[in-house]
Length: 572
Image (cartoon, rainbow, N blue to C red; front, side, top):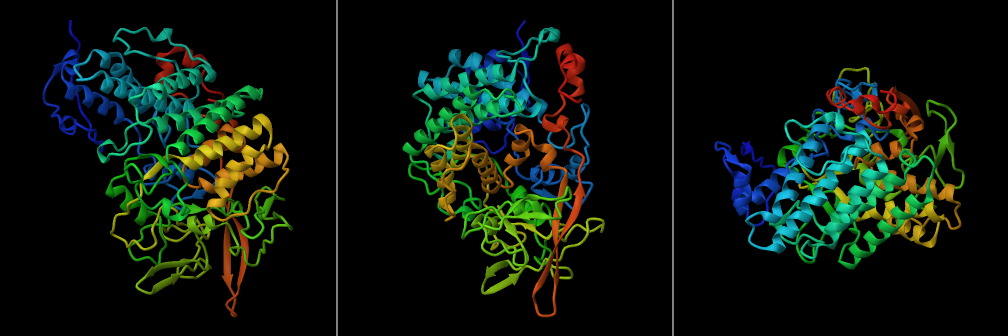
């Protein structure tokens, strides 16, 4: 009997060359699966369906929240928000409450498997097109698998559609290494396909997979495989594999006209341009963002003096602010904290940091990412607003216990992604940049140091990142441990609010030292217009225990698959 399937072709802004109409197929008909492969338009549409499972990420958690609110980067005032609930430890096998993409990723994997198995025998007009689309599907399958195992740990490797009578007791959990090997094999095969472009140059191809994505994803999956969470024995061979892959990715991409965008702040304020010689040479892949999400980004993460702002949104933490180096010396101003509440910082006397002028002479990425007391806002038609986060100021801090949405709870507001010249009610032009060249440089610097120490190549990678914002190069002759500390800090600063921090502290197994305590800065204005600065405890969190390194496998899955029940993730 022929298998019957009803297609619900989901349009999420994907536009594929030559199959625009196919993405708008009405779901009122029924067709056999074989009908799909007899029609070139339906064949491409099925790949469009496989793409449709990619999450939007960005500000799509809870009510237009950023994942940063569930990390030590930020905190939301409203305790009913998804990220705030997460911080209280609200997670169990039957309820995620934050980003439950488990079923979504498996749906994507299933559609990729079906497409890969059938495209060679489809009615597509050329073998070259079949090869390209099949390569895209392999990268897409790798993407879903990696996002899945990053969040839930190793998962069964399934290469075909499972029949309705499949015996789920046969499924077994592999090792993370076996998952990694499978993903890398798919990516390597896609990279070798001559028909797959390394850069997308046509607007109709936006958000398709490319060789550049394959290189970036390979760099990332091998980095995770080498990290302490999945490499507890510290096998240096895993670090070497990650270093080699990341270096190859950087070299190949730069040979093909990829480069860091010269302006860090502006880079996050637009969607990339697709052409042979684009203005944006840094972006490798960005996810779809429609106007409503960008609109909510603006009104849900802004300062009260901005007319139309609904909420302070993701308030940056003092811990994040402390991580930005000093511009003149390139040194870290804060080396740690003497107390568990982070109220007594260990000052670096060599940095030039002045606790009475804490926002002077900082890394330019600080000014591009965070609104602070004294920052200048707007610059529209000569009108400039000075941010006032001091107590009783126009944008002043208020305790989290006060049931108000608008003011900051930490003394800071989010600036990254938000164009200060865009007015309320307008849509921004920003897109969520999932992969970009700076991440590959950071991946390489970390892996190279772990494999071979702080080599000249590792220094080169980090200093490329720092040079872009005119920061001094790292001190020479750092030990492996000291270089590791600087690399991790550089990731935190460069990739702030990009969802990497949430996962980085887990793969490094340092969650218990980063996510227990959140602090802010309470500022009082003196009569002579000077300020007094006082660090304050904002929140003690409960989502820092080792079991929070990875999510629990959903309860429904453990009831179906005995091996999942017997090998549920630690602590759950």
